Length: 452
Ligand code: NDP
Image 1 (cartoon, helix red, strand yellow):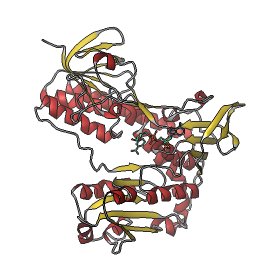
Image 2 (tube, protein in one colour):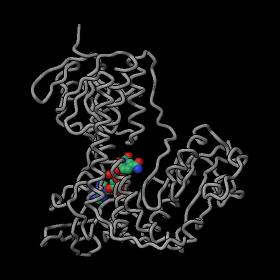
Image 3 (cartoon, protein in one colour):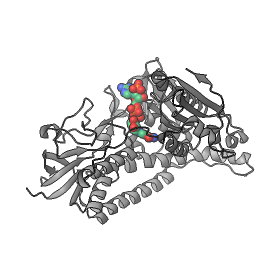
Image 4 (spheres, protein in one colour):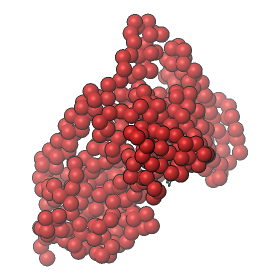
């Protein structure tokens, strides 16, 4: 049987674009890709990239204050959102152009419309055209979800925050995950009176308790009005604002409310189940270790599979798919020991097991130090950083590394290599400290603070 294409990719985000490009470029496969929105997907258009630019933007106010302690005669003027926003969108347009060029130069044919599965080898485009392919890759990502409640339509999500015409004077963020905690810091840094409600006992559930405790404490010190054990009960429009009733009985009016209450896979109305693809409870596409679905010709990568919902992981999954299907080299994407950063303020970098999870698994030693870093302390700030290692008593391997500090994301990338290689505490100790830095503490901690 002949097909129109060797590969048809649905979704032009990180995973889909990488798989399409590499399959076409490295193997000469005939590849097409359909994208209904903008190329680059969540990461480039409404996620990691604009978020990180906003993190940078929000940090300059404090930096300008600190500069005075270093002898600079300057004052930060006010933050002007429209100026920054226009520049940010120009940058996103540029990046979208880069993604389109990558595909074009690799010879991938693109369709700027929605596509769905018609049968295991056929894709139907929104205009009714049908295309056949030997393999189909689902890389359609995910979307933010709002809880079902009266008035939910009044609130925005992270998709909308990059398009606000003006910055609100006050904002309520609901949730305690990556997105909620990152935007609480960003908006606070931009001068918005920021309140965060999280229903649990501490934000960033699942991460090391001591690390998330410090992030939360420092966020509050910097001005985020964080309410733990608190959720939203009701909301309604009141004048130009939104009236909110909280579970703790508080009633307040905010200019804007944002839900950051999780994301769901974009698997609806894709013709997946009709074609025999299995979906999980959240709507995630169920795949095996090689990203193959229950239908042998259909594979899926990235957030739609709800494995580790991170751009570099989607890219790895896309590359492993091409190795397996187009290069005859069956390759499983490796989901073990993924280093990751949370761009809260202060930033957190983490790899491996939390102290709590490691202790469930085996006897451990905990090495940790928390101190005021030189740069901020000189400027009169009382903020603290944390460097922490979890070590196996039996193998001496470093099972987890947790950093809360400015630049923690950059640090954990490098510490992640050592942990991935199976470095022991003694390997860390043998490494000479880089002085004076914050991360030198990772190789100079001599005595465990806790064992067991
Ligand atoms: P998360 O799943 O991380 O967090 C969702 C939060 O919303 C949790 O605190 C959850 O509480 C809370 N929540 C869920 N439902 C409700 C509800 N009905 N009412 C009140 N609160 C609720 O999702 P995010 O949206 O923050 O992020 C999605 C994913 O995006 C992440 O898992 C991550 O993989 C990725 N991401 C990664 C980033 C990075 O690498 N820096 C940055 C941003 C996103 P509870 O804990 O009680 O369940």
